Length: 276
Length: 304
Image (tube, rainbow over all chains, first blue to last red; front, side):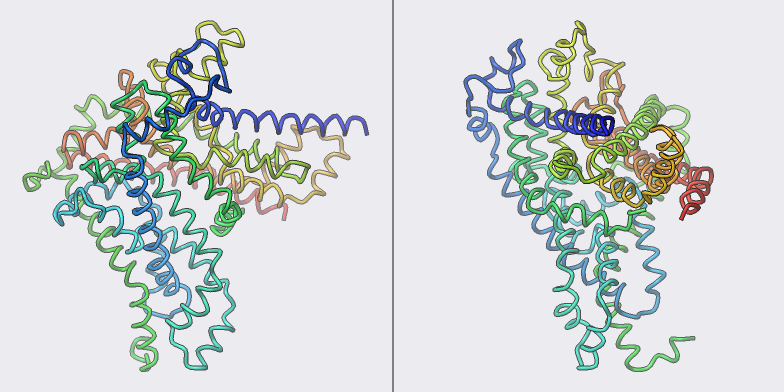
């Protein structure tokens, strides 16, 4: 019995020790963002700055148009999410609930495109968008999502739609409902969890996206937070206080989404069928 | 055959299907198939975007394999990164999952804490760790000095330590999806296996090696493959933290590709690089499926 208690205690100790290590970078980020440059470069390690100063946050708004970049990032993220939810759910419905020639073959094609490394299409896409005159606009970042740019989401939604009982849609069909009515009145309302998973993943994907804005945006008034932070970092490589303040600001929405939508993170992973 | 027998209703159904699927059909053509074909063609051309592509056959490939000074370096760096990062990250997330696998007081809070770092990514992640690794004032070296290491590494500013630094920072993010998948896998192992092993006097390591590992081998295998593929594609960290330096020690494959495409405007060369990466990834994946894959599934399926 004693050994069991000892083992349990050891386990708890290990569990919390690792948790502490995981938290340290967050604390370090937060505390650095609340320090003056003198404190940042002092010899002692202080997690609680003395005094706590907010100047890095106020200064970050002077050095870089944080609000504008936030607005830009929100706009792109929102549009992309709407794109995935609308086009993705329509296509997923086609693959899950409609009989059409070539469907099963095309589904394999869709799975294959999930495996294709994005690098293969980077150059031609850049060339295509350039011909369309879309460089330095949001079109290259947003339009693909309305054409289901991320096949993984279709896959995820299709798997979920397949699990919705067919009795409901069969009954509706007998009553003369069209596919669009079944899709919008039965399938979508029953698939809120899966749609939420797509929304959460899409948010994370685009809020943090760097490569897209890096190659397509040129005018600094169109930058996203990620690109703005990267450019600020290369122009002011030792302004650690401000860099940490901007990073913290950028993290806040992500952390909020995480806390409010925690169950969808886990659900999303289970939905993909990677349960083993 | 079936098409001939399609009734009016069947044709309507098919048309509706195409309509519903049309966003993807168009997207696949415009952002998938056409770019893939173009990319193949560009890889056989000299192309700087401003002038039309000029066909030069296999010249890009010949140049990369025989003349380029950075091609092999970037492959070496990427393989180094992958070979050390993948086992660390996969085993690390397994160990993390084992810590929080069973219900215990406080376990839900700890799981949340483990998960949280994994949602930090891209530029923010790179900037935070750049500061963590700062040789004079970063938390990592402050910590190392506190435990008596007087001259800790210069990390990202050192040719030797830059890659290990980028590999080790990956350990901060292991508590995400990978951990969740392992928790689900571990919970799926029948308890009686452990109980009977314990009665037989099997120690911790024996149980881990002969029950846990075989039971979750399919998850281990799939995660290893996805992890290899993502490691091959490392970009943002290197771009932000070191821009490939010092002395090209973090010039990873994708950074090389980006430089060729968007700094030098050598679109043909960049396309060739992309295809080499694609074929390389494919070969590695097929090799693993052939050599390891068959054994994994057999072992995993047996105890059921």
